[in-house]
Length: 333
Image (cartoon, rainbow, N blue to C red; front, side, top):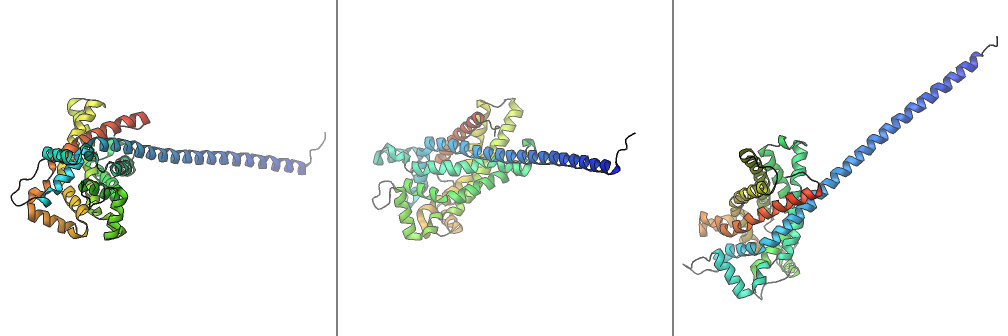
């Protein structure tokens, strides 16, 4: 019988062992590559989802801004009306303020500041509403039911504050254009306002009133989003309504009422600081002036115009956002 050499047997054994190791290593590399691929796809999916949240929110807020710009303009004029009234003169109401604007400046004056309003709506509104759900999910996890009311308030405050800090100059420009009217001494274009502010207060002047604006935005977003979220849950539980027009409409109306009442005092202070520049002092100084001249009621000045604007604005914003989210394949708010 022919003998099989021991050295050849050992050589073949080593070759097979090396081939098996290479095969296992290849499988491991394939698994690692697959895992990395899933990771990349997951990151891309999250990034794409956030971008979709931002642009759908920006479009919905811009549409709401366009429809309600006349009411926002009237609100600003009402909040500033006390500065030009003689002693004992009655403060004009919302309707009379609107009529005076149309009579003296024309119908198109009701859309003063629309350009900055649209820019602010898309970027500021898109960020504060669009980041609400990603922030809430990042803190609470993917399960919507796990988010408490306090967490919803925190998420809204963070998204609103961040958005306001970045876009405050746009809000300042819009407010000054709405307050200018036909006064030839005041700039009536966005670039004119920017030049005027920078000449008087420097570049930091563009962020004049940013602090009350940031606080208002944080509270506004927290109120709007958290209240809408909770109102939907309450209406669902009490009426049995499912996702749809009636649920979104009723929930957004509740959110608009709560939001207007909570944010109006901050809105009054912010508007005074936007218009007054350095002469108004800080937040506390402006608040003290309002309290001294108008009492506590001064902080609710322009509430009717604010609700007439913010109520429909909240309804239009959420109805549009829910519809756009549905088209884009996102979950309901």
